Each structure stands twice: as structure tokens, then as C-alpha cells.
Amino acid sequence: MGSPYPCGRQGSRNAAQPRGTGIGDMSDRDLAAPSLAGKAEPVVITGGSGFIGSNLADSLLASGEEVVILDNLSRPGVDQNLSWLKENHGPRVHTLIADIRDLQAIEPAFADAKAVFHLAGQTAVTTSLSEPFLDFDVNARGTLNVLQAARRSKHPTPVIFASTNKVYGALDDLKLIEREDRYVPAAPDIYHHGIGEDRGLDFCTPYGCSKGAADQYVLDYAKSFDIPTAVLRMSCVYGPRQFGNEDQGWVAHFLIRALENQPITIYGDGKQVRDILHVRDAVAAYRTLLRSIDSVRGQAFNLGGGPANAVSLRHVLGEIAQITRRECVIEHADWRPADQAYFVADTRSLQRQLEWKATIAWRDGLRDLAAWLRSNRGLDAPLSGRERISA
Image 1 (cartoon, rainbow, N blue to C red):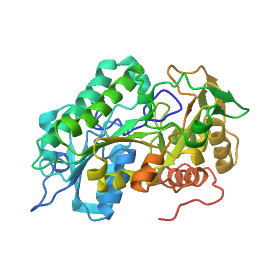
Image 2: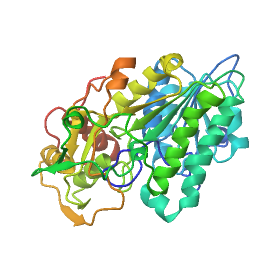
Image 3: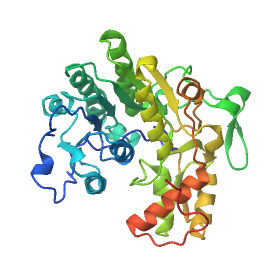
């Protein structure tokens, strides 16, 4: 996905990696295969306890849907998201604690599914470089398992996949102009609109290869097997319920470190630019895509905040200083391999075909995330300005 570091941002590591269950004090009943009454047709979310997954699940559940959370709870903190979903939505939250690499284990969740949002994945480029086999097994083979499980369900089941802007590579050929606080593209069309889906694919790093292979498999299943599939190639998504760390979820990571008054490491010069997108807008895109799946099946769309929400790391750090009312403590390190100096998603295809657009300005979104971190993580730095985006 769209980290300013060479790390993934789509989906979450949960439902993928076996290290550390994160299961906590969940009962045996919580760990059993989902059991749905009557003729209920649930929506399955792989990685459903993760950041985007839990926000998407909450939105669907609030609309009256039955939701199966398929997750292995390996990422620290995501068990809290699952508990929150259960507390707020009760018996319509069905859990299957399983790993997407185990086809036999996950198949029961797909038998009656009305739709699948595939968000589970290994999300860090750094991990892919140190453990490429694990990265491939989770992102490529795991996605193939999800597609096969959906294909074997009782009826053609739509599959919407969380891909990444990393499928476009490091964008080394992009001519950039260096300004005092950011890089900007020299090409006017990219400056005004961003990187479009017509950009050639250029997988680099094992992470880019595994997510790129998964991306292409998802699109091909629409052609080869007539499965209604679609792909969202995401830039940087942030917001409540995100447990950011240095390798994934950089916006939340920066805020957490600042609220704790801890140093933040910047790899490179901090002029890298990303178009950050609030998770509420991302959820709206996923739901809109599902509603229109028959007309857009087999297509990939770029998803991000677009030029209006294009910010450099320095911009974000400056705004965080305003929120916390103190300067961030910054440490510097060398650029990481395959880091994109600039990525802004051209979202005109989503706007034109689905009438979707980002609605939450990035400054408001940062304050919303800071308010959530303060109230839910006990981080006690003062806030300034508007603390919450009204529901």
C-alpha cells in the first residue's frame, strides 16, 4: 500500500502470519467456525480484525449485514478491534480464527457468502526482504486460496481485493522537482491528477511481487472463471482503530510517537509525498465498489486522497506539532530501498464510474485520529481545534 517507507499498507498482517496469536482471553466458542442461522448470507472480511477490516465490518454491521471476521489475530492489538465489534454488534459478528494459507480451514466461511473483502496480508516491505517465502505464501498463495474458496461457494461470490500502489514500483523514472518541503512531479498532468491506472506495472521488492501477483490473479479470475472481482490499489489510509508501527501505518505511528513524546525516525529527507486517505472514505469506496461490482468486474482502481490530500512527511509532522502543541522529536536515517519519493493516486476512474470521492480533509482527519488515540489508547497529549469528525 502507500507507506512513505517501502512497506505495505493494504489490509493488515492479521489472518496471515502465525507469530503470536493475539487471541488473549477469547473463549473456545469465539474460535470456532462461524455458525449462521437460517439462510443468512454473510459478508466475509479476511483480516477483518485489522484496521481497515474492522472499520469496514462496523459499517456493514451498522447497515444490518451479517459479517464473518476471518482472521488469525497475529497482529498486536487487533484482538481489541474484534472485541469492540462484538460489543457493538453482538451475534451478527461471526468469527473464524484461521490463516488464509490454510484453504481447508477457511473454506467453511465462504460457502454461503454474499461477498468477500480480501484485506488480509503481509504488509511490510521490510519483512518481505527478510522473509520472502513467508511473504509469498501469505500474499500470493493466500490470495489464491481466497479466490478458490470463493469460486467453490454456492454461487458466484464477488471478491474485492486490497492491493497497493507498490505494484507501480519505485517510480524511479518519474521526473520530480525538489521544493523546500516536498517533491512535486514535473509532468503537469501528474501534478494535477496523480498516478493513473494506465501506469505500467513494475513490481519491485518481494512485497511488490507478491501483492502484484495477487492483484493480477484477482483480476484474472474475472476473466478465466467469471468470478465478479475488482481491485483497489491503495495509497496511505489512516484513522481510528489503527495500531501503526514503523513498518506499517506510518501516519498513526507518527501520531503515537508524538503523543508519547518519543522520537520519530525519518528515512530520507522527509520530502516524500503521499495522498493520505481517512479510513471512512476508504470504507465508502469498498462499499460503493461492491454495489457496482457487476459493471466494474475485472477492473483495478487507484484509491487514495488524491491531490487535495497530498502531503509530505514534513507537512504531516508540522500538523502533528500543532495538534500536540509541541515540536516533534525527529531522528534521521538513510532512505530505504525502493521507497517512492512521490505517489499520489489519480482517483478520477473511481469518481467517474462510481461517483466516489474523498470527503475528509487531511488536517481534520489527523485530528480525528489523534482524538481516538487519546481516548482509546490513553495517550494524554493536549489536542487543539476540532477533535472529532461527526458521524
